[in-house]
Image (cartoon, rainbow, N blue to C red; front, side, top):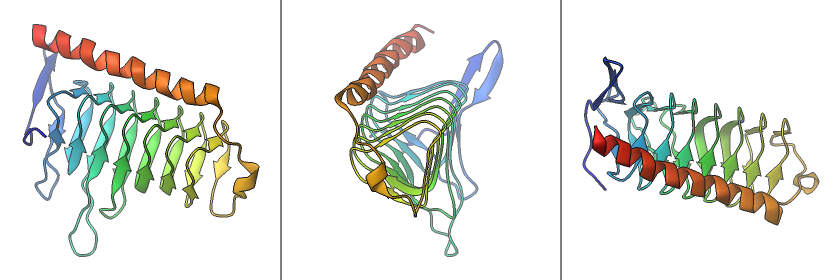
Length: 204
């Protein structure tokens, strides 16, 4: 793990963009050297980004709230995962957010802690996760909501569906081989983007 990076500033079209920020408590994000963070993304506070992660344009990952005792758990992005354009990850009262390895959080999704997302998960466009756990290998399609419940490994949430504490999980299908391959393909694509964008950075 690389040391904390403070006040990293990138320049695009002559405009300075501060993408790594301290929170009011003084915590600074820790970003692995092999990860790629787009210059327009914002990481704030107690955020840990592991190796080969892709964080896309205008994503916001913000760990700045504390509990009644002033304590805060980190927001952790697991290795080889991708946080795509416009994603927001935040947490209430310093609760933990953990994104597993080889997981994809697609464009404009919201992950609000407390929340745990397992490895090999796909979260679709505009979907919302809050106060929940999403098990290993799950697929949550576009514009869906998972709120206040634990989704066991290997479940498939269709687009626009809401999963909550009263949802009968027997009505939720399991992930198919095709859906699982789709999730893995998204990870492979974004891993390639990490390498490509890191090369471009080194040329500047």
